[in-house]
Image (cartoon, rainbow, N blue to C red; front, side, top):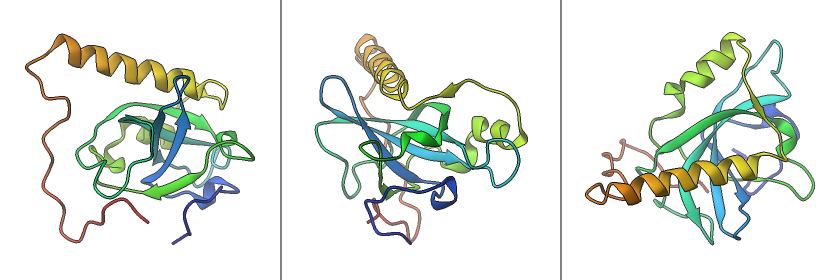
Length: 162
């Protein structure tokens, strides 16, 4: 297990469930989760599938902060999001629902289909749009809870790693 935080040198350093963040225009942090990785073929070392987690706050999540949080959208992301003065992996968490193994985009990406790719320059804008749309949806449905009910903690599940 790597020490956190770290900047991966290739997609081979990433694992399903790894978490990374982007700073949004307003200064808040948004969290993304690695949800699909290819081990061979086109895009195996240059792209991966990431999911936008329903999290927007001035600080990174700790402990069980992400328990029950939904992945709002997924996209194929260029590995270049990681690098000097860019993103770094700050932890890992498989408690975000649905778990990475259920990712339809990850399955399609693994099968080699073509899809729109998020570059490091567009990730912030795309994530901001997804989170704003989710907030607007919650505002128009006041009788819906802001967060989903927390699922039962899987046996032996760790909170946000580290």
